[in-house]
Image (cartoon, rainbow, N blue to C red):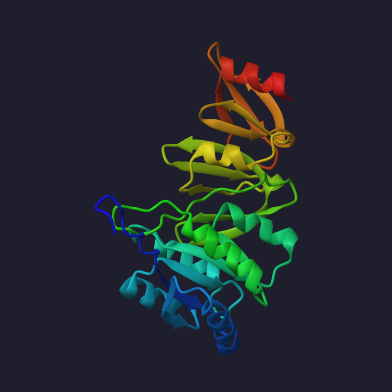
Length: 259
């Protein structure tokens, strides 16, 4: 080997935890993963509480997470990951059909439907290997949809210990608060989620959501009325919500042109 020849880089390895209440499902996925030498299974859990104990102790790079489990579903584990730095990537393992699983692309590294096929799993591992790496050498989970969601698609919303699935069309508005966004639903509920407005903008359907300003996205179907409050501000009233959103004259003008 010449002095200028660099030895080939060692392949990245990923420490993985499997979470599923069905032992046979874990065995099935373990067998599928044997053909991927870059994957090292470091633990298994059959429920959310056990999974959390493993995650906090082992700090894996990736979690294969079942959704439909007794007592607590897989979504209940997600808020418990937020104290980890960096957070592990998550691959949902689900029995949902394709219509529902499109939503997960906006909130996880990937999703797999049962039974897991070798070809589909290979795509997931390839996606994992392409993730950017942190200073500690661990892949950062990338949150971002490969295609835009539609009004009838489901999206996962998380606020601390609360996780819920809602249709995209049920989101009335999204307002920026630094790295967080305040999400207002048509039923009047609101929650704070750690996701930037620009990321929401890249995922939501442009035919439905209007970018009123750098701080605000509005579902145009949810607009009930806009009322002038004074010379400088307007009140935006959205269907099914109690508290109006304050708009500047410029934001009001821009929204009216987009309706």
